[in-house]
Image 1 (cartoon, one colour):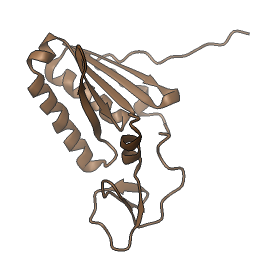
Image 2 (tube, helix red, strand yellow):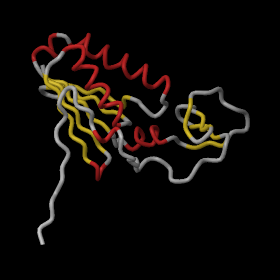
Image 3 (cartoon, one colour):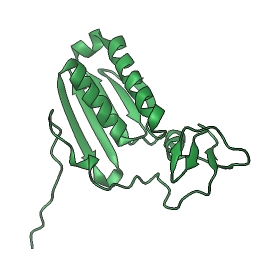
Image 4 (tube, helix red, strand yellow):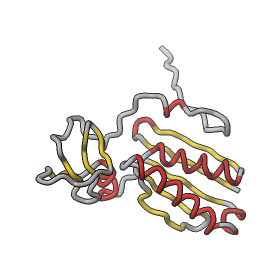
Amino acid sequence: MKTEQTSRAAYRPGQHLQIMDDVIHDPFQEREKYSEPTVCKRCHAVYHKGHWQWLPEPENANLATCPACKRIEQKIPAGYVSIKGDFAQAHLDEILNLVRNYEAREKAEHTQKRIMEIEHLTNEWLVTTTDIHLAHGIGEALHKAYQGELDAKYNEGEYLLRVSWHR
């Protein structure tokens, strides 16, 4: 009996990626709820009403490590954004400012969306993130601001998104 293998098509501008709609379980997300109040001992986010939020730290809170801080500690990104090309190199400061500003806006509302590292490799810059949606959003922001070629590949088995932007 022949089995069909399905793979997600590469991202194309104007296309809505199905992964943003699917119920996807990040292996770093806790399966049980934390008792409230709980505070992340690294970033000081507060677990309140079922999710991590930026709130004032309550007194006598339990301590735990939030999923984003666990990813950072273990150096296991959920998203990779590759930035390549002559245009990218010529406008690097501007591009990296856009990336950092996008992350700051997202992180202000969503404590688990963070950049882990921005690394210079031989012919590219690599941005690693704690969240697949942040990686996708950074790619979209780059494409919207500078056009170029954008590609995204999602690996469901590893809860991993690889985004490549080139111009």
